Amino acid sequence: MPGGEYGADVPETVADPAADARLVVRVDNRSDSAELLELTVEGMPAGWAEVFPRTVQVPAGEQREADVSVHVPHAAEIKAAEWPLRVVAFARGRRVGSAAARVRVAPHAVVALELRPTELR
Image (cartoon, rainbow, N blue to C red; front, side, top):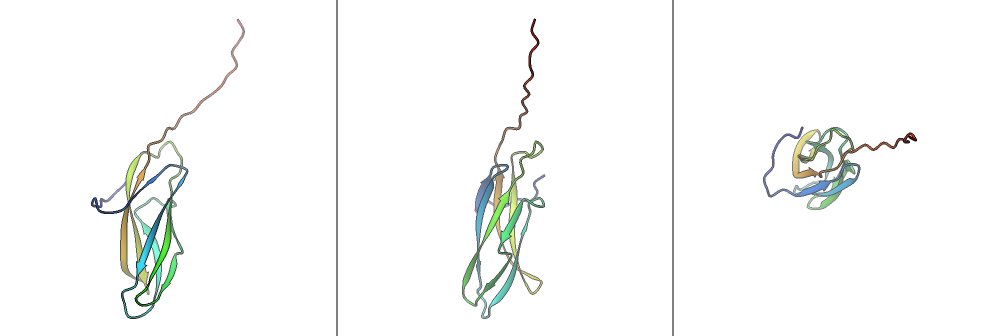
């Protein structure tokens, strides 16, 4: 079940089950030295979101980008809902920044069909 809330000013993407949605996270190094950052995704169920590359080297005063892919599995128990997603940056094991977004799982039909031969009367 989704947890957490973000305000209306965060970016939002719609994820269709069994299809990929994509976000881009920009890392801005405002420090005086280069930073080697480890990026992770929080807020989504395990396996639903990943960031690539997971490690980025950002020179002082520069920016780098990473891709965030969201893949919602296609399963009957997956309901249309909003999930808070957060990309977190760690430097030397310490949390140094984060960026939030909202992922909306699109409504989808889950049906089963069966064909059977009819008996002659």
